[in-house]
Length: 291
Image 1 (cartoon, rainbow, N blue to C red):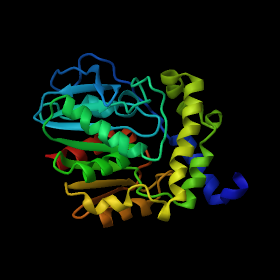
Image 2 (cartoon, rainbow, N blue to C red; image 1 turned 180 degrees about the horizontal axis):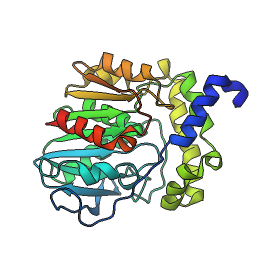
Image 3 (cartoon, rainbow, N blue to C red; image 1 turned 60 degrees about the vertical axis):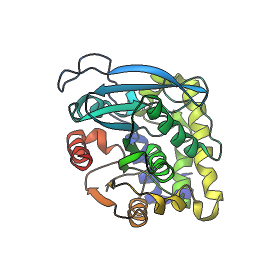
């Protein structure tokens, strides 16, 4: 793998393994910092599975947080659940099927898994009686958000995505292969996910994810959702960390170019988890855009 990646690729892989999901904060149900509201959690039946979600805030504007690979609301969005304005927003963070506490079933990756997640996410919010929602999607959750906005345009109000890509390149495929073996991840990155899943499920699901995301490389142009981008109608903000070791800048540029009227915001020091490392800056950026 090292020989295949070369010097630049090895550096990117090392950055990735050390910064994939560091600094994870797991919020607990109880008093939240802003306006005295609490973070509650529950499950609801959606499309044949029990989907787990967390909810906080009392605002009229519903916002759904969509996590990344192997992620969940509690592992991926602590600072957002705690600090997004609870007077303006009702914030929901979900666990996609097979992730977090939305188990069973075990996570699988059929060819349409992103479309399935998009439908699950929209149907979850409808089951919770929200008439229209905005989306904050990170990484895989950003891809899901793009698909949801394209396929359910009347239901999506606004969208913020970061760390997402609409297609898979050879470079992407090599990076994905480099994270297949979770035993090679840094302990800081690995431990929170081991605690959530247990080592065996965590390791097995990561391997399945790599196979699942790499299957798009076999499609024309490595297509995940590039054909859907022109169908996105809602206002969209694409945020990109200039030091993201997992998703190169050209992916953000492509989405910006093909989502009509979208805005691109660059964070010079941002990495893949910019909403955690620079939570205050990111939260203000998102709040300003969503209002």
